[in-house]
Amino acid sequence: MLSRKFGFDTMQDERVTASAGAAGPAAGLDAALAAYGAQPATVRPLGAGLINQTWEVTGSPRGHFVLQRLHPVFRAEVNEDIDAVTGHLAARGEVTPRLLRTTAGTLWVQAGEAIWRALTWVDGVGLDRIEHAGQAAEAGAALARFHRAVGDLEHVFRSVRPGVHDTARHLANLRQALVTHRHHPRFAAVEPLARRILVAAEELAALPDVEERIVHGDPKLNNILFTRDRTRAICLIDLDTLSRMPLPLELGDALRSWCNPAGEDRERSWFSLELFAAGVAGYARGAAGWITAAEWRGIVGATETIYVELAARFCADALNESYFGWNPQAFPTRSEHNQVRAESQLQAARSLAGQRAEAEAVVQAAFGA
Ligand SMILES: Nc1ncnc2c1ncn2[C@@H]1O[C@H](COP(=O)(O)OP(=O)(O)OP(=O)(O)O)[C@@H](O)[C@H]1O
Ligand SMILES: [Mg+2]
Image (cartoon, rainbow, N blue to C red; front, side, top):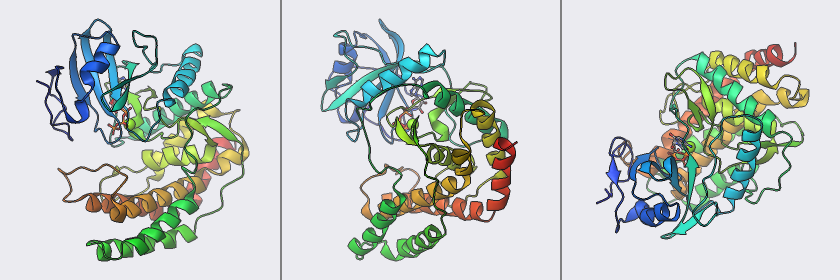
């Protein structure tokens, strides 16, 4: 019988064999395995499951692979984008997960209420928090390899998410949440934080007007697989957000994650200039001669922008309670988890604001020489 405890942590080491009749996130698992000709199989949940639900599949006729049940925010056609981009990466000799096809030859299958897909297994580990500057340099190098390799891909994206980094829209949503949820039981706790985020937003520099590039779209630390000794970055995973966007926003999103040693779930956090220097240098080594001056000059401003934008999104969800997944084992309510996340991003933003000149000097030294 397949366990139904698909929560945080609980499943990390639980090895189970798929069987009929599972409920919850696993409903459809057997049908999905069958569609891939992958039965019998042993399945083990992977990851935190904040967005998709992921299983490691072993001992099946299709070998060792990853099976994912897509979150309904993603359209099935996102898999056509993933197939195009990963095919291009592989043709350029880059390591990347690839989509497996079902026995019917499709890139995904509908099973239960959801869309399922399978990916080749890449052996590595994800990091929840950065441990040393060498990892930031490796993350930078891996992201540069990715950007350069997809730079000449011609592809019309089937899945588009307009306004992902429309900071003004995210700030407006936060203001609206303050109006809509005046009677929320946690309003008094959340409102002062929201005001501080809105003040920080007033200081943000305008971002450069540059052409869009093909980007990963969510290059945070745990979307990069490292070798098991945690020293080398292997490749980017979690490809549902592939899109075109101005490069500074992608780099800002990456660096805000890699340079925050506290991770996303601790109230006290800060921006590490040392990690920033390493991440930027790693990226610059791979992207030299490819990235434009207008793009690299936007990195510091974009990093601060993304911190504030993400703080606004978490803070709005501390009242809306409708978007981000949360960890009930670590926080009493969804609102409190989102409030801590928002505080964490704001503290990192303020920490970066206090080191803007030093961060600009780091970028200048890496790209401007
Ligand atoms: N192709 C792969 N090979 C090996 N492991 C993988 C692969 N794809 C995903 N994983 C593992 O599964 C985890 C979850 O996958 P992914 O990041 O795509 O999902 P997610 O929707 O972001 O879920 P989460 O909330 O867990 O981050 C990853 O952090 C990684 O450990
Ligand atoms: Mg992920």
